[in-house]
Image 1 (cartoon, rainbow, N blue to C red):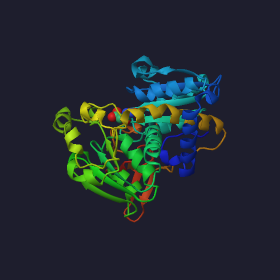
Image 2 (image 1 turned 180 degrees about the vertical axis):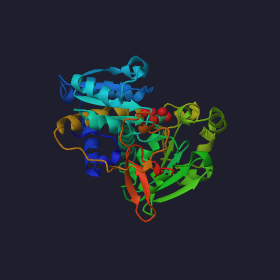
Image 3 (image 1 turned 60 degrees about the vertical axis):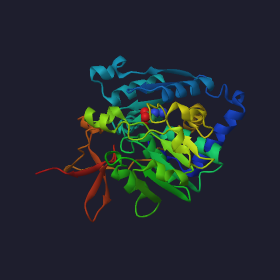
Image 4 (image 1 turned 90 degrees about the vertical axis):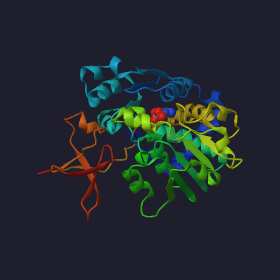
Length: 362
Ligand code: NCD
């Protein structure tokens, strides 16, 4: 069963194909109006969402299919203590494909192992958000004509911003990409993202705190919201929430064909004045979400019988994942699984959330 948990489970050729199908849908939506007739999409949203859930719903409806699900975990049996695996096993019986968002990192991976239908990760904690990345790639392709040779500024909460992690993973496979990582010290990109996707001088990147100084070289500026819900301390959130606010005057030395993106929702990190700037692409970006999700649903349903890309990981008795946002922190029954990333130094990463894992304290 083929699912989509991490954007890298799709090859670049498959991403090109999804973009081509999405563009065909945009050009001729009527052609696809009955493509999923009789099929049901389950939307399991254990965490708030507007665009992702509604664009998935709209996507399935536009393909002639139906949708069932919940948009709030308190209205599901999760509130009674049901595990992710059990919930998904049930919903597999009621639907043909499932889009799932969960606050715990690795939850969609757990779901994919239990489900008998494809699972699409619609965002797991501060980890990954592959379908937002597909939306972003479609937007970049349509605006820039290519996914190569771009200087991409990522600004704001690079620590908890799952859209940023998946976008970096995806873009690191194209040629001529440079990342400018603009974040306060406390919200810098996590080690696993740097290690896995930018490591060993593979990809050019710089880290800075200065948005205005970075501006002139950027082809894309990807703004993000400071992810209030992931902070352990509310005071820390209050201190960091206004780190970057993009105002019209800060764009004075930007390229005339800069593409300003944001996965949305925005709080205040882009002033509404910027919406009038022709370089503001974020509402168009949100619109693209519907078409690329249509293409993805079509693909996964067509490839239902193909084997899934297995995530590397083995049970290790003497290693634990100490990430409080990992699904293994709440679902005690799950076997802890790890992959070794550096044999010489004995470094392991959790197969669910990708955070570094350490030997149990004796
Ligand atoms: C993003 C998310 O949920 O990670 N939103 C979205 O899906 N478009 C970004 C965010 O919530 O800040």
